[in-house]
Image 1 (cartoon, rainbow over the protein chains, first blue to last red):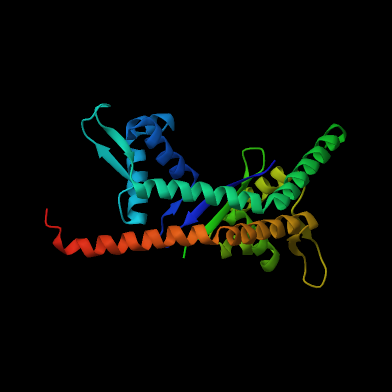
Image 2 (cartoon, rainbow over the protein chains, first blue to last red):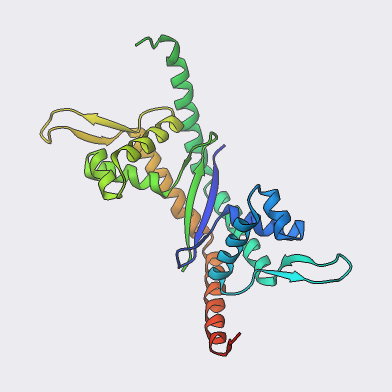
Length: 126
Length: 126
């Protein structure tokens, strides 16, 4: 079945897409930028640039470094960072649900086209 | 106000996004791949590869070359090509409408964050 990928253009040149949303979630679950970057198979520098990009778009921090404490520091999402992720996932879910019929139409067209091509293959000699 | 960009992943590695949808529309209005490519500021080769990509995904032709006739040939969309564009635009419109409130929330957060930063700027000396 076809799947929607959502990118949200927020005025400036920067946008919020599946990669940045996933990165924020991973910073939260891994507790560090380094851990999140590794989980996504990207360099620390790339992850850091993406996070800086989100903060430039939103105009305020989306992650915060914690020093000391029982877990010995770590990085977590700010309230704004959490709202950004939540809204993104909400948008993704609602948008996908709203176009279920259209996605099905495209999927079925692609599937029937692909099988048509397969059926034709054996007789194609030139 | 924030804007949605929709990419539709259709099973395989290929996807249908705003660029391909626009390209199909331009092939239709310009009457040629060359004209469409020029209108999008891309090379003929790039446009041709994108069109081939859409056809691979859909498993059947989305454009058809017409030879002769009053207009002296030209390229237009096949019925499938037209359905693909129509469904894409429909999905874009419905999805955007369904998440109006969430897009507004993100836009307002970004705007208030940006103005907060601007207000802070003059006192930042370090």
